[in-house]
Image (cartoon, rainbow, N blue to C red; front, side):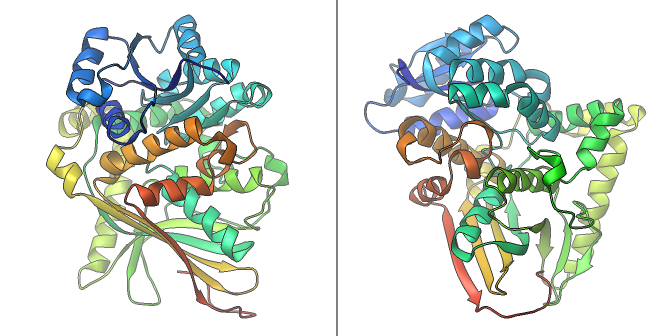
Length: 411
């Protein structure tokens, strides 16, 4: 693939786009060819000026998410497009289609299952034919989850059961993330087929009929006391992350095993039980409120507006820790930790998307042999873990118990 540019950041004047562009300006190697793209050249120019000398020569590309011709020209000019323009269900498919047609690699931050399913149905075959890697969910949705399962299975062999515990989570919420939640909720509310898809644990599978029947796999379980005294509560990102993990497994011919997989928030200390119940109630309340039209004006006043995001201090002082606890088919127990300083949804996410784009642009000979609509595990693979470690993340896998013919469930 011979292009004038290595990476184009699409949506570079938006909240997340500015952070991704700043990461690339600070960490890309000498000679790296990047550009900023969006609807307004004037706004892009202000972003470029704020990025400093490293970005002074970066081209500015005007393109609208609703203009297929402009998007195809953009895709043809670069090796990789990193898109932060959401809600992806509303704006994302024309750019994915353009990249698939042009054989251009693509990465985004979507946590929208309905969008990813539409991308698969519309673009997977085209991208596979042109060699394009369309890699969705390259941020906090769903890199820690997908990477942890991949790295564990590569060390342990096929897995029987795994639970991702989110034990430390500090950061802010952006208006864009909430807008994506609103759009997906509204789409499902008016479409029974969309509701059924969201309820399917294998919604993103390339072969739904070939998936194992492992019984119920709830994404939002009730609060529960764990054997070690901690308490668990539902994790709001589980409905997306679990489906991405299962798609990765299917695309890798179920190399991860007939895996039962789930995700939870975990709490410890005297207030753990109360906190787990409050979090569960808050998630249930938000879901109900989104379904009540009369409550929408109040939610719009209380929640961040699209285009807004957490403050610089919140981004800097945030953090996250995820721990995958898994049991392999031979009975051995494994633990994989993915953690980082910085607000997970923005500071850490900008690193994840930035490093995903760099890997797609610069490390193609070290990536998995795959094309089509992919996942972080299948489109970038273990290399992403190495890149994140070099960028300051903790990414580690350890065996915590030897093989044993039987044992209690995980978590």
